[in-house]
Length: 386
Image (tube, rainbow, N blue to C red; front, side, top):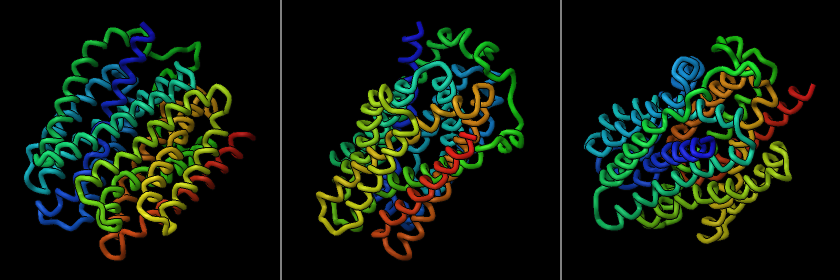
């Protein structure tokens, strides 16, 4: 039963990843239809991320009240509704409206499942869990690329993914009995008997450093994913349909990297894998910055994805170890909120840069967040080792 539940959790993370890259891959086709500037993709991304921040901050209370299973099923169902709403939208403001339930559905399930796996499963399962997210994130733009290449409108890509989410919601509803007895507080493991106040969570030594590291990481990852297709189309001259397919290389890099990372956890610590990821990220960004041609740029995009692979799951998995199992759900909630704050604010800022300066600054912008993440992670290690 435990392994069957793990398979359901993996499916849930595929569902989380499916819609994440749709907007970036379809936006070069969408924005002329709506008559808005290219930078407006950032506005939709900001609304989605704002919803995830709110629901992440509430995740400790929601998970304690309902359990991880019900939170997951409700959240995936809400996301499915939002995606179908996107598919029937023909104005920019309708997209903004449907972005609200999309964001609210994503935050709680992310925090609840991450904490559940961090407490009950080994580090390799955390990496493979996020590999499942990468599979979903790679499949999403691939679906959109095929839809666009076949001459269908972008709406059909969203509709297909929305229907897949409905099917996954049904699976989650049928799986609810598997969660019974495994979602309540467990005094023997040190899990919290109730939610912690936000002020108390932020005051924990090391909390601000880990929140800042998540902010920088997700600013890098979300900007890289959202603007990859536009960067390839507007700066590298790749056709829109081809760019939508190539943008999935970033997510394929994350997916392959996390699959490999699951095996590397058997020999390397979470900290060592995070440092390794930072080094690979630096190499990938160098390939994008240097004038080495289109092939090197595509390879660099894959390396950026591979470098991202170990950072997020290893940071999350180390949370109960660094801060204690009794604080992990609350801390993972604020970590998710910080992560989505980076997702909310930083891709729109790059949209303004691309609109007013040049989309060619894409890899330089990513490099700034890599530097910030490295500094904050070093500070976290110093504080928690005392």
